[in-house]
Image 1 (tube, rainbow, N blue to C red):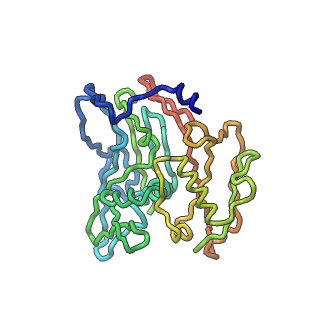
Image 2 (image 1 turned 60 degrees about the vertical axis):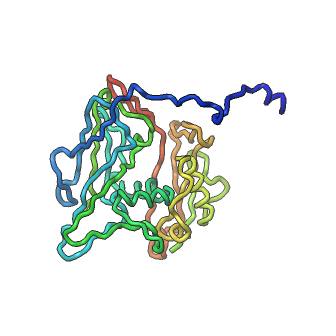
Image 3 (image 1 turned 120 degrees about the horizontal axis):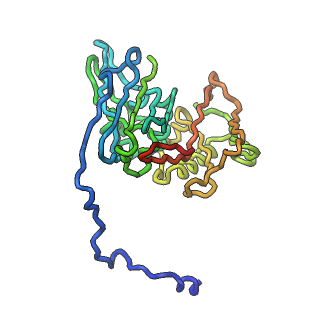
Length: 313
């Protein structure tokens, strides 16, 4: 081992390096701008349901700063209003178009369900607590769940910020608005106990899990943690506790990456293998799951060129 180690290069440890960090003098301005929906300014489930935002300009967009900001008003004069979850539950679908090309479509229906899964339940509890400053929820230590939607009084309104569930916002790359032909975001409003199930996923001839179907909460949650760690390694914990997982927050995760942490290393379905999801003992009248929603996470490359946009999936 000493021979192998001696053949490696030495580097100066950071504590002994007094070199100033690199700068970005070519960036000479940062603007905080807002875009307003085109065509309408008020939206409701039984009126105008689609809020369409067109983002154009000559600069670069930092996608991590993009937020949907709006006010939710309680039209009742006598009753209070409380959402079932965060503001994402109001939306049925979110679309992103770049240069006229549809890059992402989340939901249609059930955007709120997918947002609840990936941007709330599978996020660290500290993230959800801090987000109460933006998303119209409140933190209460002695309640379950600890993060609850705020109550809106009769005739009152609540200001909300929503981080859209879009993959391009997590790409950690600035977007050249000028050369990509602009962006268009569309937000569509919605229309006005332990489950003793067993499950197994099959792709072509291979089963997940391999030996036998998963039939208990412990194994299901273990696989979920593996899948979450593969999908986004910055997520180390989730906001799901034992009571929630046993009742209203039961989520199954199937890890599909071949080598953990390596991009484009998941199970390839280009050979047209059939994906089959198998469940047994579904009975909504026996305090068990009556419906199953399947979400698939895939890797996509988006090429942004002056000549046009190309989506490679």
